Length: 227
Image (cartoon, rainbow, N blue to C red; front, side):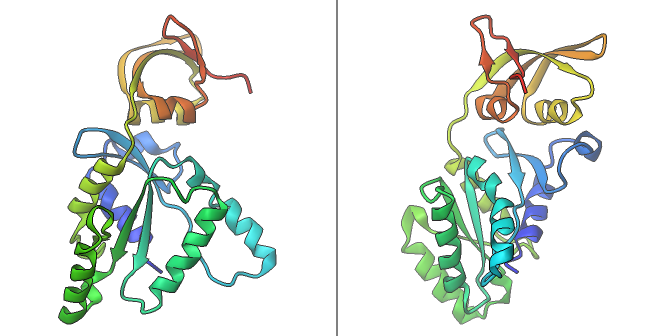
């Protein structure tokens, strides 16, 4: 594969926000990381793209990619040591268009540069430099080369996400939501009220939307939307 999961682990090791216990209720393919600007973001490891799937599996495969539609930034990882990677990239491009996210902010990442010869490396670096602001990030998830630069480029490419100061009352059973609020926001005050947790917190607006905290009132209070 492109080494996507190895890179995912390298990025999350670079700056893990909280202990693993905090994420006991989160999907194992999601990590919270802190970017250089001190912004906290969720990093999600999606399934890889597979060519020539049987028709019966194609619908199920695409359903697993729907989370891409929620992404503020798409990081497209390619195995640059695979001589056929440009063709594979075309397949990815096609599916991103089908998902209607082709115009979403995106970073190209060329992984496994450690497998290239010196001559191949020079040629790739020269080609990348000519791309200007859209140049791909050259990395090796295995050795860690380029990971810091990728984090920097992610920080630049991520859209502005204003903080909202919210008052929230959630059932204690909503462990996943509480974990995300702690991971991606800043809790100003919290107290337990019967079987609920009352929180005053600063949360990025995209996180409030993701958690279904969409009912806004002038007093700054959010409550989960009715299910």
